[in-house]
Length: 198
View 1 (cartoon, one colour):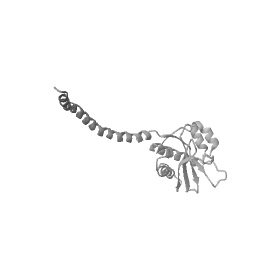
View 2 (cartoon, one colour):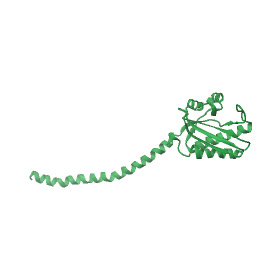
View 3 (cartoon, one colour):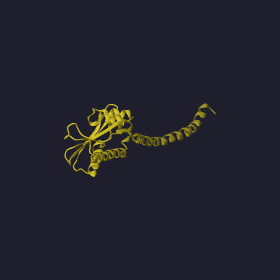
View 4 (cartoon, one colour):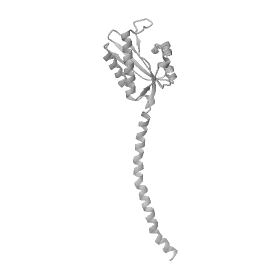
C-alpha cells in the first residue's frame, strides 16, 4: 500500500478520535459558564458573614437647661440603658456589626464623659478595645415630653463620622424611647450598608 493510501485510510480514524473530544469540551463549556455566576454570587455572602466590630457606648443625656450639664436622674438612667440596649440589639440583629465589651475601658469612658463633647475621644477608646467602629449618642432634653435622640457611627481608626441619625421623641415613655431608637437604626444608620461594608 502506498504512503498516500495509508494517509487516506488513517484520516477517518483521526477524525473519530478528535470529534468526540471536541464535543466533550463543548458540552463542558456551559457548565463552567454556569458555575461562574454561582461563585460570583457566593462572594458577597462570604463578605457579609464577617460583621465589623463596634464599641457601642451608653447613650448619654444632654440637658441644655442646666449650665455645665447634670447627671441623669434614676428614671432617666434607666431609659438611657433601655435605648442603649435597643441600639445594640438592632445593630447586631441586622448583621451590620458585632458589639465588643466596653467594660475594660470603663475608667477612661468615665474620665472623658460626656463623650458627645470629647472631640472624637470615643474613636480612640474604640480602637483601644480592638473595634472598627465607635457608636455614640445622646438624648437632648427639650421639655418634659419632648426629646431629641442623636446617634453617630464613627471610624475607630480615623474618627471620621460614617453615619448619623436623629429623631424627635414626643412622649416620655419606655415604648416611645425604644421605638425612636429602632427607627433611627432602620431609617438612618442602616438605611444603606455602612460605607466600609458595601
